[in-house]
Image (cartoon, rainbow, N blue to C red; front, top):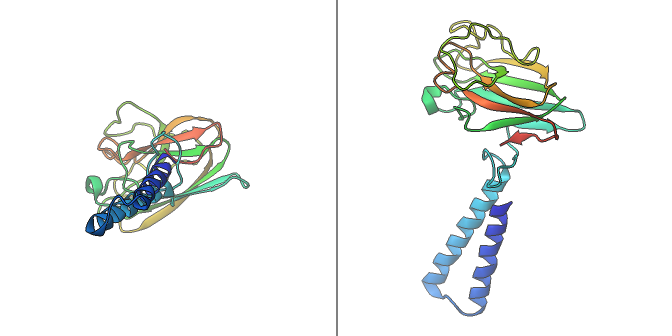
Length: 206
């Protein structure tokens, strides 16, 4: 929201300058192009895919669909969507650099797809840890059902090249958790995101 106001302020100041005869010719054209670029950036930042705004609030993302009336959230989670971290990422993010936020008590569906062309991946909702182990002795999710099948296997979890699986669970307790790939060494190498269950109905990306 702050960036939108910034864009409007830039537009207003430029318009006032033009009315007062401040710039002309090529200089005015350059200023107009700069204004347009600033306003386009403001609209893009407000539009939704950024992991948070300047105030640290929750923003919409096109891969998180929230139905407040129905009490559901659907998350399109893609492993290896980009080449970042050799494909060991979720929707291009890794290492907790963004937080998926869902409301407490909602039914959450994660439509998980593995676009990594080489490696098997998985996802589980776990308690947060300061560091992640190379292998998990226990893979019990925080919420019943919040884990993909054979999640700890390097050759039997969700297969590469577009393999997919859906998991559904109820986010029954507010708190700070994590979305983690529990295939050996993957979380340790950064394949995890923060996952927050909010008590105040917030949903989106922080």
